[in-house]
Length: 382
Ligand SMILES: [Zn+2]
Image 1 (cartoon, rainbow, N blue to C red):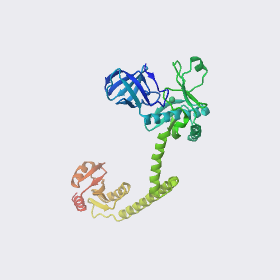
Image 2 (cartoon, rainbow, N blue to C red):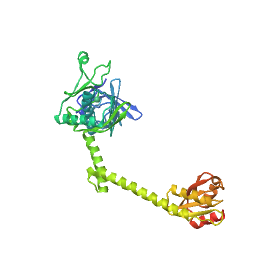
Image 3 (tube, helix red, strand yellow):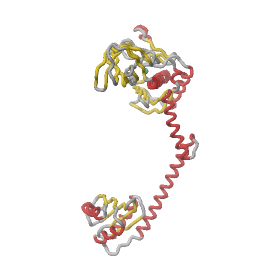
Image 4 (tube, rainbow, N blue to C red):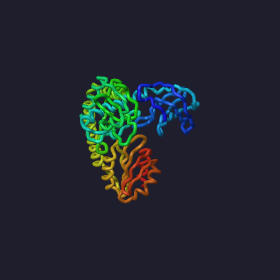
């Protein structure tokens, strides 16, 4: 068993003796007589840092023994200085202690349990076994931040069996030995294996980011402390940029976007009206001398409009009728016919007009890079 020192969550540096060092796939697994490195558990990742000059990439626990995955070997019997990556650990503790804090208020008011917890690099989620609205969460968030301002003590304890029987705490598991209890005085009592800050003031801030229905309950996304600050900055700069682009005050960007979407919708309608009018006039002027194949050329039109023209033009020919709408580097086309099986013919058409595309026997569509003269010659000859 490794002696664990992380009951003091703010112990970032310690001395220890190397018990063993074994080569494994990803590096060296080092066991110490004691450690302040927290091994992955309870939804929180294992600590990283340094053991003398060896980098600790991860920390895991098996049967009470803590294994430090290091990038270089350390000699058994050697005295080493352990240094936990302070920033990473501090952020994790802010998020974890913050999660206990807001959970305390949620549990007290709604009686819900936290049935899933994930403390990732950029997101923290807690899964509640009950339904709670975003507004209700914001009320709990406000209470949590008031408790941050009061700087309430957070303590770790290992109550005896008798005391445990009468103690009311969250995350109760039956038949567990040596249960570790994290208490936020007057707010929350919870069984937990992770390192915590010594008081709520060090959490800095608790922020609920989002909530959604999840497995009949609610998944809540939060961030606390420095991570909450970073997230705020990220969102702040996004809003700033939108605000600059729309020349709107930061708190008025939603109105500006709504206005823009409305204008966009009106413009789309106008464009589609113009296209329809253009199609009407093209259809009205369609002429074909005889019943041979023929083609028309248009400005850039949408696929539906081109199809409408094709459906009218095909009535004037026993051969093929093509609509060629100007597009980058050539034309988009739709070719229709009631007699020529176009699916079989499409290979030849595309080869002759340097194009690609396909479809049914009655209608094919695609694009070509041939010039107008070549296209007209092809239709005249077919
Ligand atoms: Zn916990």
